Image 1 (cartoon, helix red, strand yellow):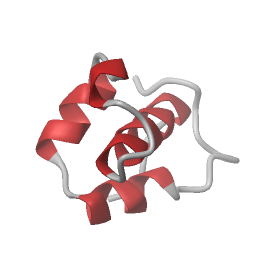
Image 2 (spheres, rainbow, N blue to C red; image 1 turned 30 degrees about the horizontal axis):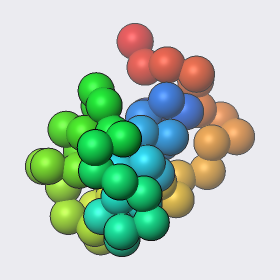
Image 3 (cartoon, rainbow, N blue to C red; image 1 turned 60 degrees about the vertical axis):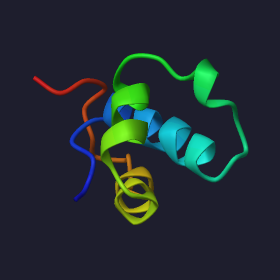
Image 4 (cartoon, helix red, strand yellow; image 1 turned 180 degrees about the vertical axis):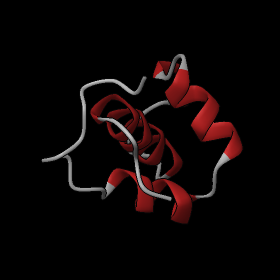
Length: 60
C-alpha cells in the first residue's frame, strides 16, 4: 500500500523505525503508534518508501 500523503509517509517511517528497534516505541504517538500496532514491517516499508514528490501534505 502506498502512502496517500506526506504526513502518512512520515508516520509510517516513524513506525518502521520503531519496528526495527532504532527508536523507542514509547516515542510514537497518534497515527505512527497505530501503524506500529496494526501493520507488518513489510507493509510499513512499502508505505514509507512512497515517493513524496506528488503527495499532498495531508490527506483529505
